[in-house]
Image 1 (cartoon, rainbow, N blue to C red):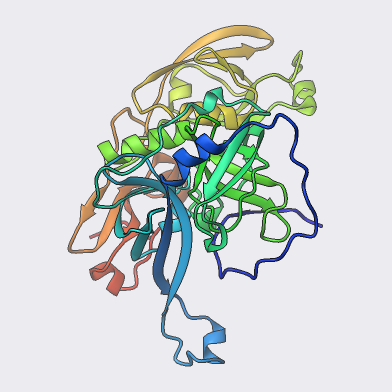
Image 2: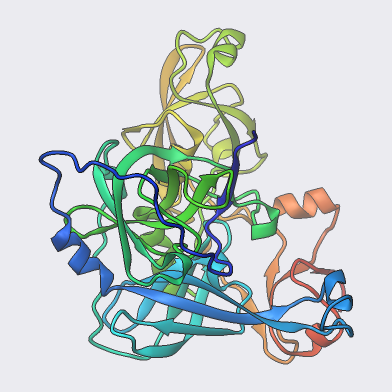
Length: 410
């Protein structure tokens, strides 16, 4: 059977099945009570409402006119400040026109979206409240395989649920941020893999260490059934921290690019390029005029270190780059024809310069716009244009415009 990787999207809660087995508790198991008590009060239940587009089935049942109907979905979120900032998954809130947040003490608030980032599947929302319990950031780079962790969320609408497991792997790229979830060429996947039970409704919930520090945001499961079967994936908190800081400070993610295409080195590639081992990441292509091109990095170069840290997979490198902004400089250790050299690279934005990026919002049109990147203009053979990246009630929505449409003339 084919293994299906899917996001932990909520759906109608199924009947709760009784377990037909018991699981032994290992001797000298760690005590999770303190970490759990810190976490449950900082993890919230999120309910969203949105218009569900009609399908062919509506014509055969009760909605014969095929008009839009209200749909409800649920997920989780993590309070990260005492004044009401909450981080969750983009796929939990991206379609919502109403967001309801319920705290562990059953207080309920309406939340607003501060910003979203489809490339990392992260979103920042806020409620109007103060003196809230919140989680402190840990350091996901210090997380070790085999370390005990807790997953806290609201699976199947079972609020404040805590499960335990270990870190199974790091820097996993599972190709979950596909086009349906807004994935672009800049999608960043470097998940922490655990065997802590995560199910539909856990999306946006907390992954914490035994000290109760936030080390990841639960996002996806690997399953043939749609429910947990042993693998779950979380966005590392170091990525979360950077995205949140950008959204609060700039209202837009300041993503840095090196302008290269990469691939993991395996035995076939090592043999093809006459490499003495399979360490590092190979540069497949270099964008002309990009940051790597300016630093004289060439196709076939092997990146072995990033700012002093060894990197052996594309996911590891993307995770480290994601913490930087355009204009910042990084140091790469490169192996070229089995000789080691050092390169300093000034990172750029997607437009090919080092400026910080801001979206343009025109209220009367009811949309947010973004200039086309160099790659998009080249691919579409356009000299200029702006892309619709967000829509809300206004003139463009009334004319049938959709996200992703490109405007080339007034």
